[in-house]
Length: 435
Image (cartoon, rainbow, N blue to C red):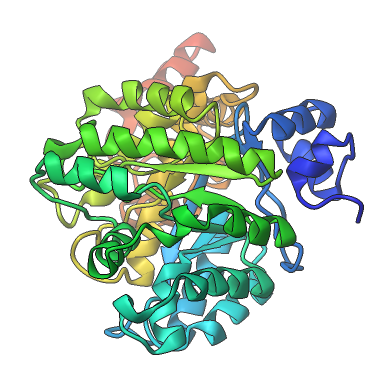
């Protein structure tokens, strides 16, 4: 190939097969798409070594994508179960899967995941460093952190979360501005701790150019992690979060100078009235780079229901400009999600993403809804099930409570507004009290 990354190709006027696939999916002119990739407002995370990928685009003017987190941990080390989740996530149309494995030799799971997954794959290499080297955090060297990133690149990882924005300046801002929940980012807290223990600068910040060279080599999209994302609504939009965002904007330009694709990660827990302003801040400070948000969770009081708090915030965020939603499950804050938790989280986040696309007024974003509404107007139950985001659950609910009149449901029976209006407008008697 005579290009390094999708961004490099776009800037050279080369249309890649990945661009053609994404343009067709998005019903967008491929040259318009390539122009957005060249500017950095759209990315196609597609590592050269991920042979099974079905590429997706993330960014300006494209459908909002969703990510599913999974992986092995010390308390739940079951590779087969996690691979079952992978299959279910892909079947449920998740565009991205992040392997957040953080225990032991994770390479076996990661390689199986990449081999089988048509979805883009993300990782957080710092999670893998402790097990990979079998060393305590403070004993890992700067070069060893970079070597883990290279290992993930060789394996075929499409995007990596790197907490490079928590440098000494950001850390000092954090210390001067106390928080209710301190740092809740796992990767961010590890990098902050490493800096504290070794009295050194963040290695990913200090050796950022070397990191970018690795990313360019494999076409890894760098997802600039939000170490200072708020973990409580009390901490949102504070000095630490904004300071880090400014640093991430500077790192974005440095990545683009080396043709490395960039995603910016964001909150987190955030009051609903702050979400729109935060989307605007990210787009301004990070020069229009795609924005990837966790939730945001709009309240802190709903453990067991955080797929709902996350979907509320995700819909507002997507409508206000977020490009990529990380799912939240009912198990958030409580435990590793089960496969049922994962399914609930995927559906809730897909609803949020679709609602956001309607709010963004993306072309044809309402077509699916209009088709469903027409099927309802026609009382065409089979078509409704076919169009439902979760046909299995819709059928189960319908079959669990059979109505007297098959054209209605057990909620309204013959008082069904749709049934009666159809009959009256067709010149028929509605016959509510008699057969």
